[in-house]
Image (cartoon, rainbow, N blue to C red; front, side, top):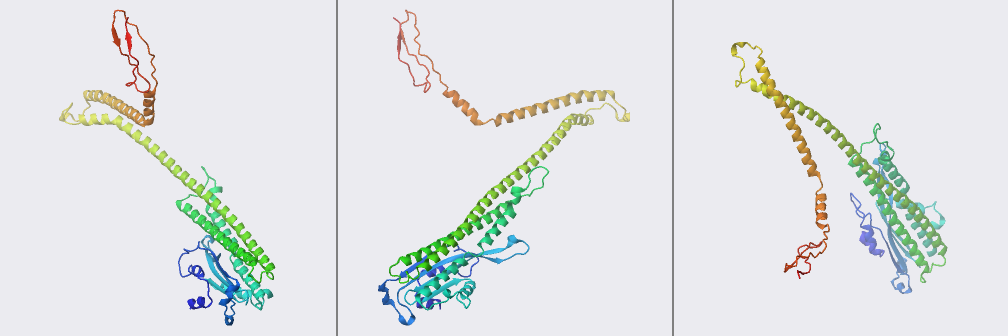
Length: 437
C-alpha cells in the first residue's frame, strides 16, 4: 500500500531515507540523522508531464526534511530524576503544484499528535488564510503556515527538558561544591557511580545540543529554499506571495534564535557538569588519601605494639632460655630428696648466665636493626644520582700543560711524550720532542 501511494503521487525517492528511521526499536540508532532534500521542476519544459485530470500541471516542487522535539514519556511522582524523556522525530514531505495549487503532505511520526494539530490548523476555528485553497496563491500561503506548524512543534518542551537536566545535575553534585569538607564536618561519601551518573547527564546535554543544531540546519535550509524559490524567474507566485515569504522567513529566524538560546544554555550545562565531574573525582582521590592515612596510622600503631612486644620478648627470652636449661637434668644443684630448698649457688649461676646473655641479645638486636636501616637507606638512594656523578667525573676536564723537560746534556735520546686529553686520552699524542744537544 505504501509503495502504491508513493508511486501514485510521484514522491521523491529521498523521502525513503527519512522513513527508514522509524519502526519498532529499543534505542534510537538514527537519532543523529538529519537532512533537507529538494526537487524543483518549475520550467515550462515540465508541462509535458501534466496530468490535468489529477490536477497536475507538471510544474511543481518537492521538499522533504525531518525535525525533532523532546517529549515527557513517563513522569515519576516519587523522584523527578527517574522521569523518562524521549526525543521524537517527524519526517515531512511536501509537494506543491505552482499552477494548479495542488498540495500534498506526507507526514511520518510515531503518534497522531501532529495530525491533530494540522486538523486544528485547517479546521473551522482556524484563521481564514490557513484554510483557504481556492487559488494557487491561497494554497501557497496555507502551505507556509503548515511548515511553521511543524517548526513550532520542534520547539516543544526543550526548555522543560533542559531545566530537568540542570536540576538533576544540581541534585547530583551540589554537595561536591557547597558541602563542607574537613574534620568535624559531615559530608557526602562519593563513589565511582557518582562520576558515571554525571557522565550520563553530560551525554544527555550533548545529545540535546546535537538535536537542536540539526533542527537549526534544517530550518535554515527551509528558509533558504523559499528565498531561492522567490528569486526563481519561473516561479509565478513570487510577486503576489513575496510578503508572505518574508514573514515566513522572519518567523523561522525567530525559532532559530530561540534554539540558539537553548543551545547556549545546554553548552553551559555541559561545562558545569564536566567541572563538577572533575571535582567529584578529586573528592574520590581525597577519600582514597584519607583512607590511606587512616590505614597508615593504624599500621604505625600496630608497628609500635609489635615493637613493644619484640622488646619485651628480647628481654625475657634469655631468662626463659636459661631457666628452661637449668630445669633439665643436665645441671643439678640439689638432690631429689632435698624437697625444694633454696640453692644460693644455683641462683648465682642463673644470674651470672642470664644477665650477660640478655645484654648480648639486646646489643645484637640493636646492631641488626642499625645494619638493616643503613642497608635500606643505601638501597633507596637514586641510581640516577650515582650514574650522573660517575658521568660528571668521567667528563671532568683534565687539561695538562705541554711542557718540555730539559735533560742533562750527556743524555742523547728521543722521548715520546703523551698527555691525557678531554676527549680521548688514548688517541691524543703530542709532537715528538728530541731532547739533548
